[in-house]
Image (tube, rainbow, N blue to C red; front, side, top):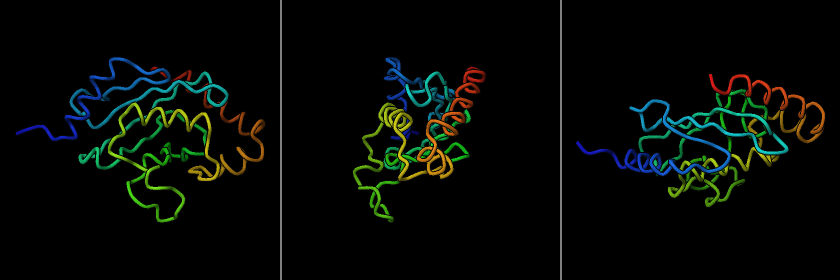
Length: 169
């Protein structure tokens, strides 16, 4: 039985990952499962600076036709990460037209995306939140917009401290 195309693509990406990109590291959660990856993200300056945040990428069997799901395991307070840790970013949304008309098809998932392009986009999102399309309404509207340097900054600082304490568990 031959290896599915999705597994072959992920195996190639894993091999390319030997030359890391600044800001994150990625690898398999278990060597026997190419579809489940763990990433460690170094918090970007001015937002989550000093933090080390763990997340999981779960790829569907029909990757690259469909996007992976990304979930932070480390607590994170961010407008584009819901309270359960699920990441809300355009490139991880199913391909095609947005039924709400907010995103253009070319902003959504495309089969050319790799672990590296996903992580670069996520790090960019962490550095520059999109308060107009929040996954965490409390973080976006009540704090990011209204009290960015007060309550929002305090909650983020708590997450950064906690991430430092638990980064390598």
